[in-house]
Image 1 (tube, one colour):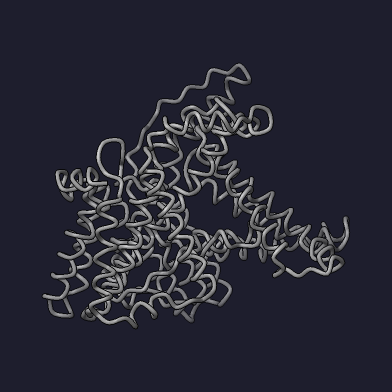
Image 2 (tube, rainbow, N blue to C red):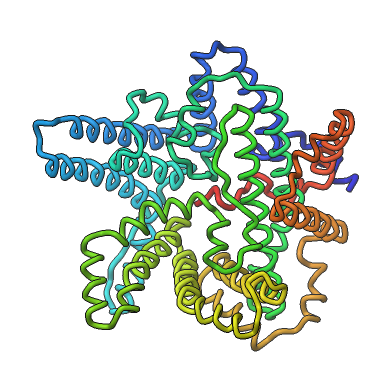
Length: 529
């Protein structure tokens, strides 16, 4: 552990821009400038910091979020003008506004599709061509992808759609909308915010407070702990296990479990840093996680994991598709031909299919991601179908959903579902995922895992560090799930005790965090999506 501390001191805060320079340099400087400027100029400080932050990672590609802001701004204003033109009949106004909305969405999605998916589509066509003995060729375009494009594209689409639905008024202040789109804490990993939730707070220029800074940095510290002490320690082991994916079923299980832990700690930890950063400015970003592993089934899991992505798909794909006139006509035909039950599930099933196809594609241009989406689509549909019969069985056995037996069963079932899904998600391709899965049943030997535990890039102290960190995270999660007011209890202690506690926490992150060769502390799993 002393070696870790020395490595940290030698490398300085340059070990990772995102994980150290951000909270100890970039954010404090931005906060200081924000406070020093008069209130009316503070939003420009946030905007300049956000554009600088984006330019650091993506350079000239900063034109993309600016263009997305211009498109959504123009679409909103045009839809507002059409709505206010009483000389046009109501139906015609609605029709024209739909066209504007469709144009805005198509431009944004087409841009996203070309940049992220054109090579994927081209190579897929090449494979199909070869299957049919064709000679289709594709020269890789290898587009540079702006950081956060999947996040700010969805936010811009949500803004335009909300204006069309009259849920919000079109914004007349372009700077306010641009700041919403590019606000630096949420740029790389979300959460996917709604305009009406944070735009006013972002542009208000209200002075920050000592409580905001303290509460924000406490949340940031918790995120750094999860990211650096747990996720980044596990990263080398996960890489090694997935690189040697056909050795033994026990290694497949270990790979899936460790990646699940790494991904959760990485993503939720980064989101803690993001939300904490917002708090320092008095901006309360939407929570993106709510103890997902306490969920009762796969559907509930996704109500607790990446919450803002799920609510986006629910509000802008699931409900619109379910209520669309063509789908309702289709539902009626299904009901007339196959009965009431089939008619009842037809529309939700179609909408759910599109949601999970979109979920898979949103993660990136890989068939493993699409498989991952379809995996959850099938599982959630099966759960929906069998939930009522399952509750009937519980009733006959005189058990309730809160019975310890039922809760343990559901936890084990969910854990198996999640780690299998993550195995395919992380695998290089579907074929490798299938091999890893099949090995669990055909070539499983615990002694192989034991023999290879020392060759996974982790030493004795790494294992103990991760284990201790996991126990702490689990304990905090249990308390939060039970509604225990952790922060309130901490704040009740004398100020000296609180300072001592947070000082120890900072030292724990510095000493036990993963630094040096073999670690990429700046690598954030969901930043690439």
